[in-house]
Image (cartoon, rainbow, N blue to C red; front, top):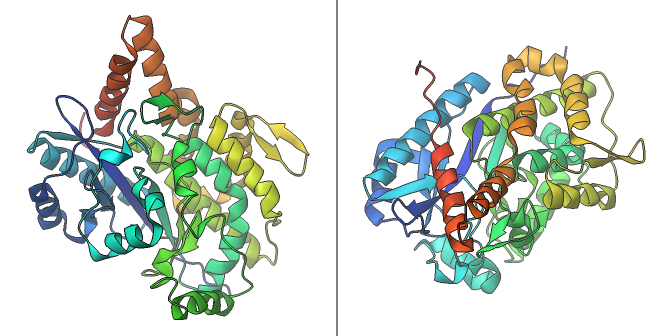
Length: 380
């Protein structure tokens, strides 16, 4: 009899901190970081730049627990930041900030990044969302990583929230990836036949002094080094918590679907990275507006159709996991628009109202502040 994995969930989010009055990107006061760590323990900490703060949920048994914990974390960060005249935003880039004006957090790991990667690291004024799914078996994590790569562009498209970079519309829905892909060991993961093969490759780079450990691998999906999880890292961070939870439910459902196929001696077809990278680019460029290539059909399929097919594919799994409601709300992302859509709509409306370019970008940041805080589960 095949033992089903736990499929526990963990969600990490990286927030940018802005001045509550001017909405310009602001350095985080040291007291804020200390207060966040004192109150939230290991669930909060600094990020590469001082203007960032990272939180992570505890290991959650299901999507409802993940929602409750992430809601608590967002409320706590909002309250603590407010005490210092700051507001957090959940967007993968600030609409107008310049990376040259930012300060790197004083931490040995970050100093090493800056030393090794120079100006490539200095441009890392970006934030993301990572979803961990509990899979205790080492070889299972490698097998599912190989197969899950197909779905990474779908997840990216739904999460896109970084259209603006240094005060201009980049033309992309996720400019974050354009920055992040300059780092080494990013992008789609390499394919391995087993856990031991993966560890041999990691060991080679570590022994050669190229990196300290596997946490210096920043693929779109990777086996986590510190936990027995598979970590999906391709996503932009979602301004709205509801959207983040829906994407996490999709990730969890996809992992169970791939495990279910494996348990039945089947598997998802693995396509050449050349093809998956084309869909990755389409997701980065267009978000959900232009669809992705269905490799079986050999044609571009609209995103609403892709979402419906995906939900049908994982229907038995989200039912088993008790996450149907959250996964079905993926349709709301299409109806509401992604974080990138929210920002462009806000900018266009501001310009129509007579705002200047800079004023319109400030309104974009205000909109991100306004949607950051989710309603508490017991509110009304």
